[in-house]
Image: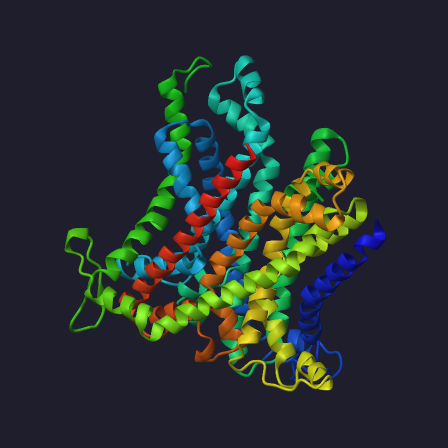
Length: 286
Length: 299
């Protein structure tokens, strides 16, 4: 058995090294003592905090980008997750021709490339919805629009798995429909809601095309947009530091969501919930 | 508030009420923009300000300007861009499949901790911004970058970041391969391996069992994964922009970005977006039709 798989194992590990090591090198070079992003000149924190003008800490254009990325990601969660959870519950229970049309409409953003969504929104904001300015407001709307469907898909999958028996039990015990949703269904949906938050956060942080199409100059640059515009100009390892900071934020969010969900599951079931929390958040069977 | 015995009409009101805000959002910020693209593409251009003026009534649409862009796509300068984009996507998807299938297969055949570790490592690229991943290759492929220097040692000395088709396809593969491996893995993981064992018991060689059992059974996963990465690749412009910066490697997305952001030619940009959307709708239709056929065959 192992002999048969030796070649495949080699390919797989080679792929993992090829896919991960370049990023690791980019991270290492954010600590380079010199200006180069290609030749190692010793360890220093100058591009993080040391340099009084060009470090991540002191260059306003860099930390503005980081702040914009975080603001957009948090804002997207606040709007998208409630909209998506309610839409998913509504679509799951409301069986009619209108609801299947809405279901179709909801799956369209999933198969539409970002450049089409971004271009359509840019043209609409500059010709029809002219009261919505390009920049952060337009970017926020764009991020909510493309991530809404992710939340709906995630929550609907959990709704299908749960079935309606819990709610029916609550109704038999005298709860109104609204109470059954609030007191029984929403708590049961917690893992899917957390997973939804994580997906929205990650896809917003990652997003380049829509942020770029809907940005209004340097004040609304996000980290990916900043990387795009700066990598062509002569740039310093501070850019690597900026990109690294974003990676750290993403993983911190991932870990935080797993910790919170683990604690929630421990409280509910009394058993160790770490494994199922990881599976819920990553939506995989690890 | 209704009591436990609520009427069907009341129930419908509750469920549709829950769905209303999200549906409205999608209508206002997805459907209306999709329509606006057409209204701008088939609209007028203000003669004084050269600005696109959308025409909302389809009966008043005019197709002259859009026709100009179309003829450029069919026989003019944009034809090369479309062909190049298609070629890049086909080659990149093919490379991704050839490299990704064995990897997905290997992971799907593992169990326990090793599988968990492998999957965990496979998911990491999802958490690193695509732009950062490309940035890391820009660093490596610059003339004095680590990869360029390493390649020079083995005798390959060239400018990688200056209009090289190889670099752009390489960048597309690097960017999108992780997104293919996971759906492939999911398909292979669901596969009923007892069927493969049965084929082996009946005398098939390993290769035959793979060729006649495993591969056909994972066809749906292959198709789904390919479409999943081909759609965004068709609209990609940052990979070629970051790794090449040359008009020699411009893709459809580069043109759209140029029309809409580089120069203010909204109408041309809108038309090209429509062309791209129609093209991708064809890819999607092909996928759905072949999916339906596979389902019919299997049932």
